Structures are given as C-alpha cells and as structure tokens.
Image (cartoon, rainbow, N blue to C red):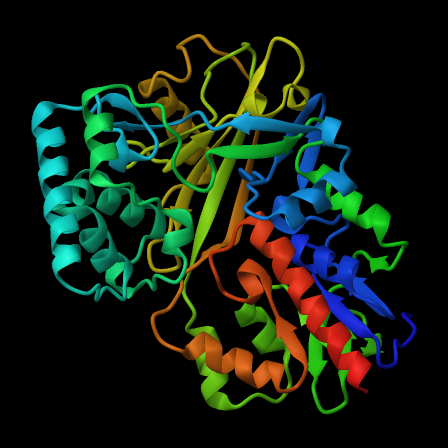
Length: 441
C-alpha cells in the first residue's frame, strides 16, 4: 500500500518530460511510472552485447541550458558529438538531406521542376502575406509544387497517414528548414555539404544507449521515483489518484506526460464535450524493427529517408553509427520505422512485416544478400506522433486542466511535436510554474 502524499506534487510518467519536471521541482513530490524503468519512448534495452533504443532518439541542442544540464548529468566525455550524415533515397538515387537544398544527381527534369517552382513560391511570398494554416498549404507556400511533388508530399503522407490539409503548422518552422533559393541552386549543381536544420549536429551517449540520460536523471532524484505503478483514476474533487490494485495518493498539483486522451479518460468527472474531443485526437503509431547484423559497417550514414511506397519503411537509422558501444565488434545495428494509424492499419502479420523489411533493405542496397541477422525485435509504439490540430480543441482541454492545477505536458501530454530538448525544457518550465505557485501560498 502506497502511503498518501498529502499536497505533494505528483508526477505521472518517467519519460524525459516527467524526469525533468521532478529534477527542477522544489519541495515535496513523487514520480510514478507504469514501467519498471525510466525513459518512456526514449528508453533502451540490452540484448546480449547489443543495446537498442525503442526507436531513433537523438539529442539536438538550441539552448545552452539544456546542453549544460545534459552535460552535468552525463560526463561530457561520455557524450558523442556527431555531424549529421543523413540521406534520402528517391528516384533510385541517394541525395543528401534536406531534399529542398540537395537535388544534385537527381534527373535534370526533376531538378528543373524543383528550382523553378521554388523560385515561383519565394517570389509569391514576397508579393503577398503568408496564409497557410495547414501542412499541405505551408509546403506549397514554402517550396512550391516541384519539391512538394517529388519529396514533401509523398514523404509526409507516408509518415502521417492522414490528409496534410488537416495537420496544423505550429511545429514546422522548428523542424523543417526553409533555405533561400540561392542555396537550393548551389545544392542542385554540386554536392553541397552545408548543414541545414535543427539536427545538423546531434549528441548521443557513448555508453548505454539513450537510457543513459534517463538513468542519470534518476540518480539525481534521490529515490523519489516509484516504478511499476500504474494510475487508473484521477478524482479532481478529492485531489486524489487511484492506482491499479486500489491504493490512492493525494496531490496538490498534478503533472502528467502520458498521452492526453488517456489522461482525460482517467478523470472521473470531465465535461462531455472535452471527453469527446480527447477521444477524437488523432495520432500516428509506429512499428519499429531493430536488427543486429553480423557484418561491420553496413552503412556510413546515420539515417535515411524513404519517400516512395515501394519501400515499406519511411526511415532507417543506424544505431551502430551513433555510438560504437551499441553493438559487439564486427557487427552493425539498425532500426526501420513503419507508420500506421487506426484508420490505416498494417494489414500484415509480424512475420510478414519482418520479411518485407529485410527484402526492402536489400533492395535499397543496405543489406547484402548473404548478410546474417543475429538479432531482431519488433516494437509497436501506439502514440508516436500526435497529429497537431488546426483548431483550439487541445487548448480547451489544457485550459480545463490548468484551472485545476493539472499540467499535461510533453510530446504526448501536450499533444505537440516536440524534440527531446523541448521535452526537457517543458518539464523545467512546468516545475518553475509550480514552484512560483507554491511560493504564493
């Protein structure tokens, strides 16, 4: 039986957002995690001499604070700095990422189409105000029909599995670079290696996979984390959460990083309109297949994007190139990601999916015909990408919760497309808010 935590701040979910919230809180708190380890989707598993993350997770820093915090938690000497080496396979040709500034080696007709349409889009942007409020229109407004047709539309449709006109754009400026036309021209006539985008430099733990970061947070929290504790109910009027098994705990403030629809479903009394809204939130699920290969250096790349439907996966990444400590000598490791939704499920059994992935890896030239697979594991990540809405429904839910000192935060709790750094900073901001509210009491 868990003792009651009267007026404590209780935190649900020990992913990076929840861990960061706990780390930055002053005063009494308790952090509850359903799993037996911290990290959430950024956790890792050790299988023999292989270490695999559940999917590709990399650290990109825009702020000194987040970088300094991670270096404080993980010895800087144990944090690998990498210059992105990512590519796109389309038209049978590998081109550098991002596509919009690296069309070199593509067929001349494709290059011409992309450059002319991009020039038209940029001239139009100068002449008139931007009006896009959805991903489809933003792509056309930013890059024109050529880049949209040859990469942006097919890749994003393959990833999101939902009409692009229904996806909001609050996140796009942070994640999709919009280079000027002269850079695109340079990248059309030569192998232009200038880095663009938020992830041109990334960091990764030298040992232990991305789990090392979560474990470092845990070590700093002085045993205030309770694992294997699943929350079943939230009673706002009693300021009380209920656990599987019947135990209860009182809270002053409540912080949650679990998926927003699941949080709303736990609350006993919620306006019907908000409950309907929460049930209607769209998301993309990801099937992630991790493979260990009995050959060293199967690729020099960090990850590759696949916009064409002839490949089942939309992205393949190479763990063994993030850190040499993730696989035994003489081997390589990779992950292949396939997206699906409730409306567009994967109509294949796991065995057929694995066989198709391996076949497509060989088709792409990543695996050789005689490569031996020494490890494989498949993960299904239900809430991988929240589909950001154009309307204010998520804000309506958030306003209801905040008025009751319930903070639903992070990628899944806030229903936002967020990087790992943004999740860490979101936890800090939430803790600061709670700390200030406690000082006023």
